[in-house]
Image (cartoon, rainbow, N blue to C red; front, side):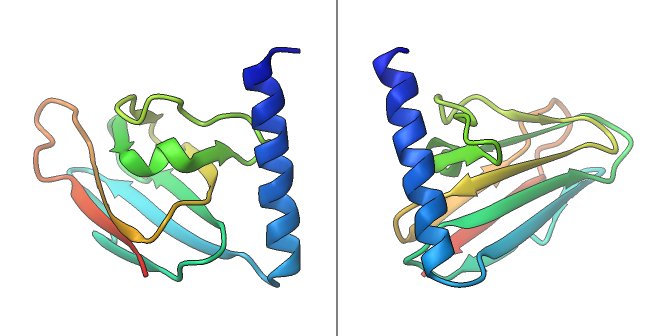
Length: 126
């Protein structure tokens, strides 16, 4: 087992045990429609991990690009995206879920597909 994989397992276990101690986990949902994210502003309480659920209700593929992905693992405990600039691809009718443990701050998200410049949003952890 590599050191990176061992670190991922330790972090994943810590996140899951932390969630179990704090009661119900927060879940925030973002829906990608054609040419916009709904809602375009999300607010989450700081201090505990939360689930970020993404769903594509549109007819086209969409990206979910955000620095928040650097703090996430998918719901099976695997690293979601090690590179925060790598998009989370959302095909029509599909969803992605991430367990996120990020520090307080403001995180932008957007779709970088050609012709989708208005697909932006903000996640605020306060």
